[in-house]
Image (cartoon, rainbow, N blue to C red):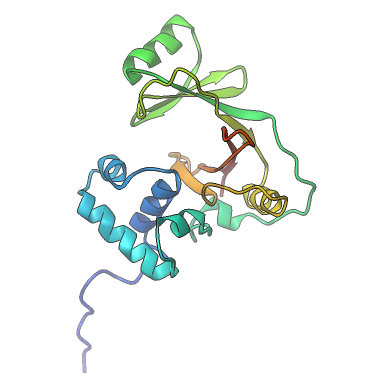
Length: 208
C-alpha cells in the first residue's frame, strides 16, 4: 500500500529553520520586528509568526530570553570548529562604527574622497578598511553626535563569551551571526557594556 505524501513543509534537520535562524540572529542583534521585516522583505506578521515558533521550539518565554539563548546553526562554520583550550586574549580592535545621514553619499565620500578601500556593502551598511581595522558606516539609526563602539576581535567567540561571562560580564545577547558572505564566511558578534554603560563587542569570523 502506498503511503500518502505528508502535507506541509518538510521536516528540517536543525532546531530552527533557516528563516527562524535569520530572524533569531536579527533579534539578538537588537533589531525591532519592523526592522527585521523590512530587511527580510516580509510582513511584520510574518516576523511575529517566526518569533512565536522560535520561542516554542527553544522553550523561552520572551524576547529577553531569546536574545541570551545561544547555539550555532547546524550548517554554520562555527558549529564545525573544534574548541581549543587557550588563554583568553582580547584585541586587537577589529571594527569601529560611524553613523551617517545617507549611506550612498557617505560611501562615496569615504571611498572616493578619502580613498579608503571598500570591502562590501549590504542594506544600510557599508564597510571599509582602515589600515587593517574595519570601518562600518550605517544610516539605520540616524546620526549620533557622541558615539564610540569598540569591537574586539577574538579567535573563538564561544570560548570568549563563556569566559567573560564567568568573569562577571553581562552580555546584551548571546553570540549571533549577523552576516554570511558569498564564500560562506560568517560574521559573529556579542555585545556588552563597560561600567559607564558604553557599548563594546567581541567579534569573530568563522569558516567551514
